[in-house]
Amino acid sequence: MSAAAAVTAALALAKSYAIETSRSRTALFFTLLFPQLFLFVFAYVFAGGEPERVAYLIPGVLTITTLTSSFFGYSMHMVAERERGALRRLRVTPTAAGTVVAGQLVHALAALLLALVFQLAVALAVFRFPVAGSVGAVAAVMLTGAFTFVSLGLFVGCVSRDTRSAPALTNLIVFPMMFLSGSAMPFFALPEWVQRVGRLLPATYLNEAMQRAMVQGRPFRELLGPLAALAAYTAVALFLNALLFRWESADRTNPRRLVLGLAALALVVTAVALFGPELSIAKRPS
Image (cartoon, rainbow, N blue to C red):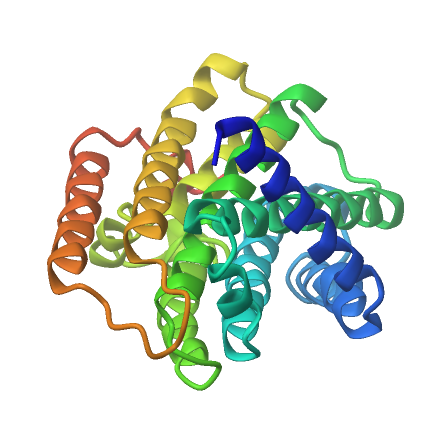
């Protein structure tokens, strides 16, 4: 299949997934409305509805929405497609595995960006908090973060055998990242040894980039550090997706590919630990 045909096929798959989502009230509820629960709980319980305090919490709320949507929503969609035999039918066509992953990724990325923009619009309309940074900077952070976590979420969809094992792996990934990244609780309040662990997680750098763009209003060049860390995790996630994708639940994971994928992940984590930027979220705000 040529590159142009692969792109056309991926976009066609993404369109079909988008139509499927738009016809499901349950999917629309969890895409657009359920994330607002986190918004209002955090805004009223932890910030008392005060605009300045809500502004400080919004980056964490958007990070949580990115995490939960990518792992609990879009990764599960791929697992469900595999279980109901949709991927098996695609396997007998000229469609390549990369095209299937790309179609899932485009659909998930569009849905997640829609959810994030809708959540931010609701937050601004209700709480009227100030946004220090430019629209372009905020958009760049949201797009990079969405691309990173959709790629990571699809990795769970690629390696999970079925809908029984996928939630266990998802919970193992999501909840540590949620609490250790400073999204669910302030990063500066975590013990020092926990912060050292948190510095290895991609969610920490998304939260950091959101804080720099939305709360601190830093110029775009000062966002490049956390965005580079996110880009590194995106690259390794795409590599893992290509390496470990399975068409059917019965397909066995190649041990050599698994070792190669884990080695690539370890390399990225080491690079982030050594060269990751200093985190402003580790300092108590004034």
